[in-house]
Length: 410
Image 1 (cartoon, one colour):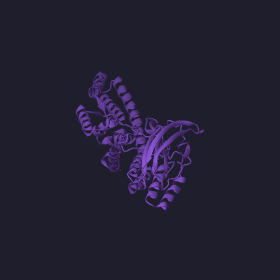
Image 2 (cartoon, one colour):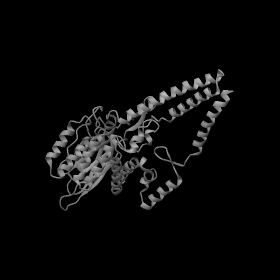
Image 3 (cartoon, helix red, strand yellow):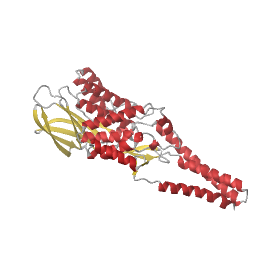
Image 4 (cartoon, rainbow, N blue to C red):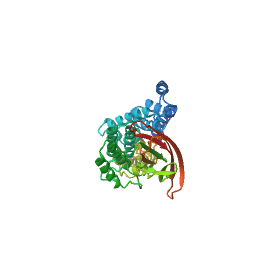
């Protein structure tokens, strides 16, 4: 008799919750898995059309406009890099500047940061600002765009801020910032501003970094073309640990270990990667968020165990013919504890800047005036050619040509 009184009520609540969840489906979902109403999605689509956003950027821009601050940085990062690759540098700067503004606003102590510490809030529900390697890449790419605009002061500032985002602390495997590409860019910006001593200091720092991938020709003051070569696929975030609370990284190996640039059969430069993003992602040590997620996992396991014990107690009480009140109390406690265990969300956030490359190569060239046909070849570890592209580049014959930046994707 007590069993009929207590447990049907419990199952009725659970069934109602499941039915409610099933009826709440939506056609569109955010990168965090939350539903987006048809009205909000349609408004975002209309805004994208009104602004004349290129087709390659439509989906990310709709996400940017429809998902609010929860995923604005994520979509702006992705859209900015795609904009660079299709030559829409105006949009790339706009997206990156928006992402930078949001990243700087998401500081510890903000309501969202405090909310993310709760055992009942999934990490993916917090406002995305990226891991340290993603934030560093944001400032690095913005610095490259400043180089393209001949704004060497702001370029230098962005490369320095790239390193600041990479700083972690004494618990990291590599406690100091070690983006060699940022130091290379800083050195080039210093040379273009007439500060060779600053360039030498930056290159000396980079030479000591454990992230160094091999021989990297230094920038020169007379270089008029910077090749930014992106190769391979970036780090993939995966979950590990007891309940998926640990953030891990998976790597898709890169066959290309160096690039050569030739003109008319003459070798102009050969360079290893300036940056390996998988190295940067995987050597940052424990994050503060990891401790919060471990606590959530402990809570979930503890609450689950308690729910089991209380549930067994409720069954025993009901079977022994003891009071309905006692059985109901134990059953309610078991159900409430089970809900608490299910509501705790210890899974690591695996949203990622998913169009980053595995490695970035930086090659500076001083080309003669007129038309230049460049042969760009990717080499594997044994020196065999595995990739190839041709680039036509014209150096104007009036005055000292500005620094041009060309982005190539392999």
